[in-house]
Length: 139
Image (tube, rainbow, N blue to C red; front, side, top):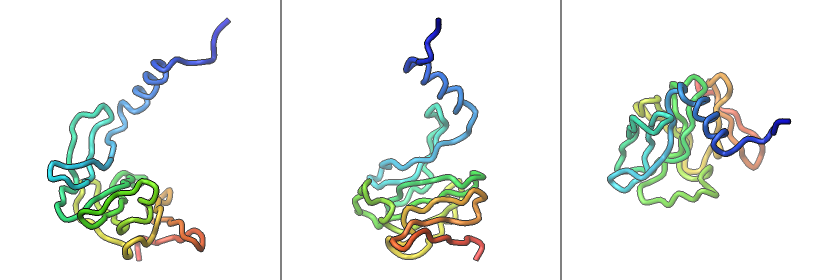
């Protein structure tokens, strides 16, 4: 007989193996200056890098593009409180290169909420009260 259940340590080992060679994780965290910035690190937590390092903004909710070359996130005015129940509506949709350079804002405050990449990375889908809105990034 054998068990089909796995232990927590087995699950952790499987996850560690799965992400071992995956590259980078993007996340938001408080920076030394007290604002929320975007950071990169390796899956094992090493090589931490502050991508945005902005004193005038709070950045949250980052997502890599499918090819890993761009990052989509929300940019809020400095001092804004990030509400995890409403972050998709907070701030402006912003896209930058994966090294944090060349940020471009799309729309105004709260526009394009709950944005997500298309599978090919050429469009952004946004959930609105009227349904799903698609933004073509080439135009």
